[in-house]
Length: 256
Image 1: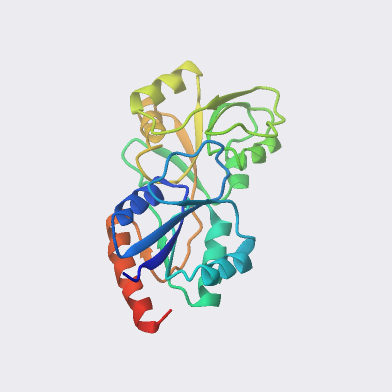
Image 2: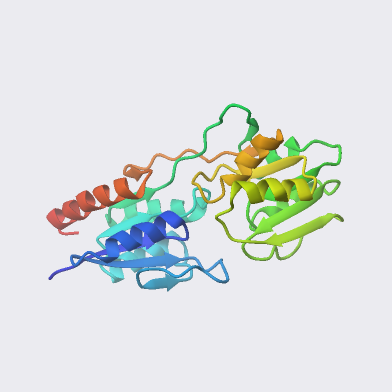
């Protein structure tokens, strides 16, 4: 059987789940690409390629060399550079691109959110007076908070923040979600947190901290996503499978 070749740019639960669904298909050959930024990635259901491509040009070269029929960008909602590279590589090669991005969180009754567009905006939203901040944004952009060293920070990430923050009063917590609401409430109480900083990543795995902040009446600084205009976009794995079938069929007809 002439298998259609799919490359998934991953690193998210959606990418892993989608790969798991497609892995059982006899008509598809699926490869999952991980950037390699997580030191101990979770097991994956399909062959994995680890490391960068060398920008949009390198990704385009890979798509052509491997005769990829469909490129699926299922990276984190805040992985802006790889998503930009995926759009450029798709445009350069004609390989169809499907963006899989889980829906963001919506405010519920009791939420005290300050929405900002960037990490710099999140730093500014903390204000000048010292506060006890739960920094739940991962490790890659944590150094932005060096601009506000007067605060106490509890920084949670999967891998260590390296180099560490310059602030004098910082605690680090290494943990991988999902995080239960009860545990998040206990964590915020234990560390006497009075404000939470989070990306609007969406999904269930890290939503517990948002619910915990609501329960405790704590404010949340929420960094929103940049808007994109992807032609083919899916918010769930189910929609992604349906669109992938359509796009793979279209590429077959075009002889891509």
